Every structure is written in structure tokens, then in C-alpha cells.
Length: 365
Image (spheres, helix red, strand yellow):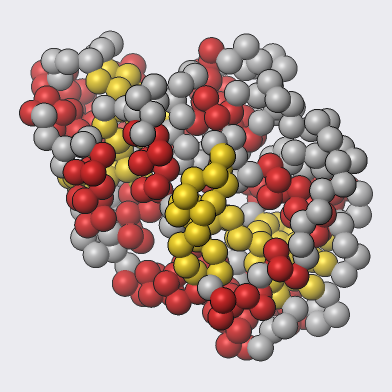
């Protein structure tokens, strides 16, 4: 397949690994931001091809992992209302909330929870079920924001008064700033997610690299893509240059996707956002603009916690924050593979399809 087989070619991968070993002289810690890249690294054992002084850290780039447990509490409380149909992507179904179990359990208790493949399916539910209130869980990074924004835009355009979004949208650059503000977690370089930058463009990361005083490579998801990104940031790191390099030019362009950015800016505005286990990060997310407040599920259904399930489902001993910040290797967690497995997760990084703990459980048990 075009742009696939050549980026998985063993000879090209070996050549990239050899060039990395030749170029790299100093110890370096490189954080890949995207959970999809974490899984690709482990699935193809790319970390084993690197010199021992190069360490890959697995950052908070899994949207499900950073969705707050209290957000899921709120979602489940809404789903359990008899007049509500709750729409969600499948990767949220088994993520533990703080106090109410997970969405699968809510569904087993009778909640109308429906797994969807596109936010726009919620439009059909709203049209076909006028007596029901349709609530879509709008989560993710810049990759999902345009589709979620389009859902709110079309709901307003079509006059659908029974369609709402419960928003927990995140932005990547602010969390990288937060990581670099802490010397204990700050890596030496970043691998930025190609699908995020396909929306935002590469230009914002030029400024970000200078601001963070660290090299950034925008990378794809095939083995050669990732190793090329590693090679690019190591060249910059060895030269002492805090710059951005686009190692994914077949997908990422300087100005990104103008139409996607336009619909995002029409519907959303910058807002403070809570990250699961990491706390509130200023200006790190998106919220519905006042013009779309009528479609805000948080306004329609204000969250009040009953505490009925308090401390039952989200044990405090889950060190998810340390894992997502690169402070704790998943395999070094005392619960990894014993008390915490994908079938019985203590936290989101083990159950999410993009979670680092799930990646290590699947590929490195």
C-alpha cells in the first residue's frame, strides 16, 4: 500500500537505527505524546533498536487516559436518567469513574448507552427519538474537536433542541508546557502526534519548540516514521537547537486544515480543563462558546455527586498521573499485571486502547 509498506521496510528501519546510533552521543529522554505512537513503538519493538542511553517516555497523549474520572461520574449520572440516550466512542465504555463504576455497568443497570463511530450519528438519534434527550460525550484532543464541533454546529443549524454535548476537549501544547515546567518530568525532546498536527498545522510547534527550549519532531505512526522523528530530534538535541522539524510532511502541512480550524473556532473557545490525575491546567482545553450554550449538557444537567459509590471503583493507589508524566514506567508499577489488568483495570491507562499500561501489558508482559 502506498505510504505504508515503504515505512515498514526492515532495511529502512535498520538504516535509521544505525544512523541514530551514529548521531547520538549524549543521554537523551524523548517523550512521544501520542498513545498510538506508544503502541506502535512497543508493537514493533522500536525502543530495543535504540542505543541504551536513549530513553523513550510515554506522555499524556491518550485522550481517554486524561479524561477526568469526575467527568465519567457526570456522564453516568446523565445516562441513568430515563429520558436520555448517551452516545460515546467505545474506548470510554470500561474506563473507571471516580464513584459510579463505568459506562458498561451503567448500561447493565438499564442506562441507554450507545457506542458510535462518528459524532454525527447523534444527529440521527436526535431526529429519530424526539422524546429523548441525546447526549454525546465530546472528548479528545485536536483530532476529535472538528467532528464534535460540527455536531454542535449542525444541531443548531437544524434546530435540534434535544441534542447536547458533554465536553472534555483537550489541547496538546498547554500540557507540554506544564510538563516542561517541572524539572522532574521534563524530557529533552518531544515527538508530536501527526494526526493532531494535521489539524493544527506545524507552524504552532515552531513557536512551541522555542518556548520550551526543546526540539520537537512531528511524526507519523509507522516504524520508519517514528524512528525518523527520533533521528530528527537527536540531531537537533546534539546541536543544541530548540527547533521543530516536520517528519510527517505527507500528512502535515504548515497551516493545517483550515476548514477544521474554522469550525473549531466557530463552536469552541479556549478554557481551563481538568486532566485526569494531573489536575487543572489553565487554557488547556476547549468549551462551547456562549452562542452554543443551549447544547451544553453540563448546563442542562448540572453535576451533583451523591458519593454513593465513593472510593469503590477508582482506588487512590493507581499511579496514573506518574505514568502519564513519564515519571513511572508502567512495568514498574507494583500493581501492573497483577491487581491491574485490562480485564480488571485500576485506572484508565490500563483499559484504554491507547493507554501506556495497556500497551506494555499487550506487548511486554
